Length: 384
Image (cartoon, rainbow, N blue to C red; front, side, top):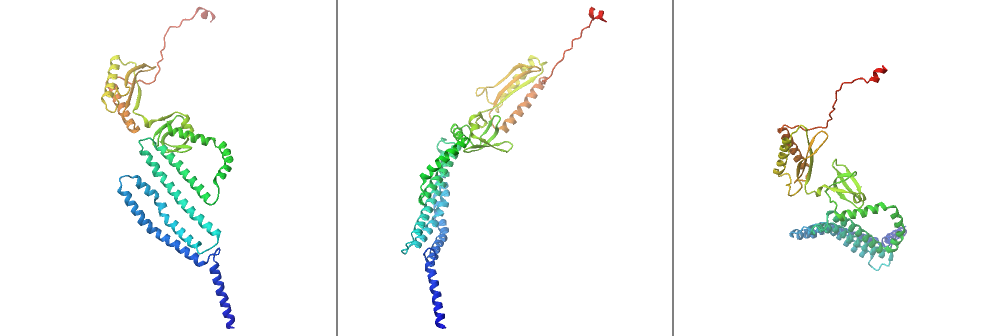
């Protein structure tokens, strides 16, 4: 009985050893557990590595007066902190496939995974570096506008993603060029159905190249939209109306239509016709005109005639008024300040007009009735 029990225990132990040695894909469980342990050790060291190395790098970058290196370090922090993960996977996988194993599938799988992680980290770092490097283009003597920088950043990011994806596909033995050629016919079919997309894309390039407007500008497209530019995209431009409603305008519309950019104004215009009653005398007209002109010339809120056209003249005889043309410019282009100056000017003009004993005219019609004695014609009397 004891021999049978001993034999059973021996068989059981051999079964345990067999399972332990066979493990997964011919790799014993002990090696797998050791591999996991190595990887976990590097994960634990990741926090220490990040704290020590990155803290030292931040210290070096903070010592320089240039802010670009600070942005570069901030962009590279996530990829750098991922390096211990790559190292842990590399050493753990190297230990896993060591010891003379002839499992070619496992060896190729581990090699591909290591190369994929390395390529992913490299292109991840490049992807994050695009933004700070692109922002540095703004400092090159105003050559690149903000919209051009944003477009360049987006285009470079797309390029990095495509190159990274192609590199990873090549690592796993997938040839990219035949794949691209295969997609060519499909791309032609898509292009035929996406003509508006490419039209808006090209129009956006023209808008940015011509610098019609920039982010934050107040623009107006007649019968389309008026508001503040928030974002110039590949297909549409986002414009925020003054009622805070966003409007997404296709770039082709902005390229094909006249765009008024109020933010590029040098001065802001005021053009009024001041309507006075026909009972106003010539002397009263002259005094009203002279006092309005004097107020414009002596007020620093208005541009002098040597800088911009300024006119205060008796302009026309309208249907119910004698009109004085007021044409001048304010130094401020801010809408709120401009409205305040207009309000003060209107109050001053009213004071001047009333001070001269003149009244403002309003649209009216006069009806003249001619009274005459009506006599009957002889033939009319005869017919009665």
